[in-house]
Length: 291
Image 1 (cartoon, rainbow, N blue to C red):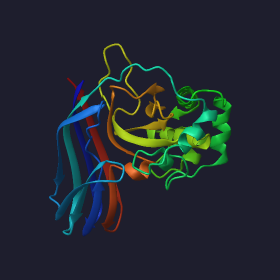
Image 2: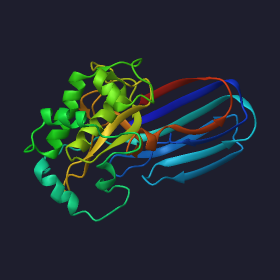
Image 3: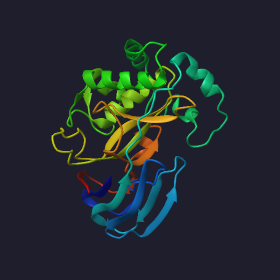
Image 4: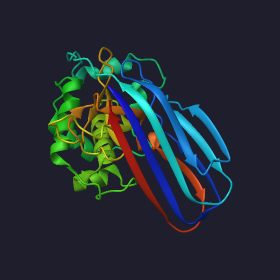
């Protein structure tokens, strides 16, 4: 499926910003067997003083920009075309949770895809005992890793309420979990914490959802902004799978990957520092058009 992506993020400052450094993770990547970036461009208004492109540790495309002149408004615009491949139907050949530690122990790699990076606490996601208590209520140790991921995702979807006004980007996962409502970032962080607490390596995925669903199907929650979902490592034979707890579905042809990491801090669309005074307002516009 071909998708045309349009994203616009605008910041307006109460007082002009005299300088700024920003790391942008906005451009979708080409992922073998999953999606292919056919074309893409990031435009910045005003033009930056410096621009540098790189690939981070987890394989995400990063655009670093620097501003050294005063500006009262800053706009990042992404246009891209992506070919998203439908996932093949799979059999569940993942090991039971009791056997997962043995398979983890046999992996010696410390590369970007190594599950060891996604097993313990990460900077934005400490592991609280409440997550393990909840997770063990949903799955038993004899369940396969894949079925445990799906069962936990469905349970969270049923127990949590999607509420775009309930949390902010800085709300701790435990707070959102205790209140049982939030946005896709909260659903994903909570699910990651629950999975890690029972020994399943899990990470965070940022990306897009198609804005217009197929005829007769409901619109997915989170389609009006950048979206987030979960990747989980389910053993040597299966490897990584992706699950969207906000919508209780396996990530598939509607999900376009931008960046992957341990938690939101690794994949934030815009991250950096400003030299300014006063407040700021932010607006987002997202359009994902299928062909």
